[in-house]
Image (tube, rainbow, N blue to C red; front, side):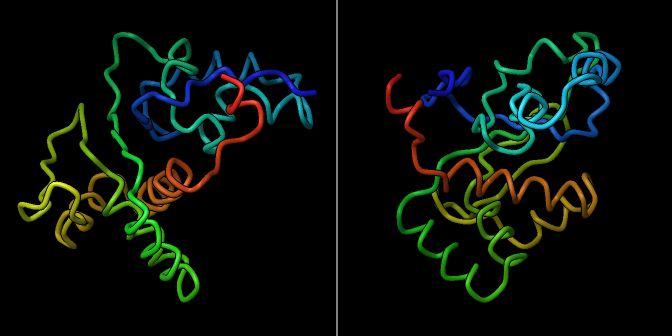
Length: 165
């Protein structure tokens, strides 16, 4: 039987890109240097960036440099209707599905100047202009990473250990 997860299932998902300068990468490398296989995969920093911790920032806060504020991407869980639209897109194009999940799932950006526009609809998708601005801010790798996190936050069913919390 595995260990209980370190993350909460009722938190607000907040994602910080792995290449953000606010990460203390020396400390991360020191903590993970001798880990291999499952031990490496179960490290909180790795779990945070592969989506396993559902973007629970509290699980990785110790590896942030307090003096350097990160760009924080606040996510939200998708409604069933939104998720159905993402799944339908995914059968045709994974990149389009990632973009759609991000358009629905990105709630706010904190720490950098970028306002999001949902066209007046509270749960509506972000505009294409917003995705273009986001691309300018974080680059292609960042946009892909954020889209993957938007999917990870919303897609995964509760795991057995999470159901026991």
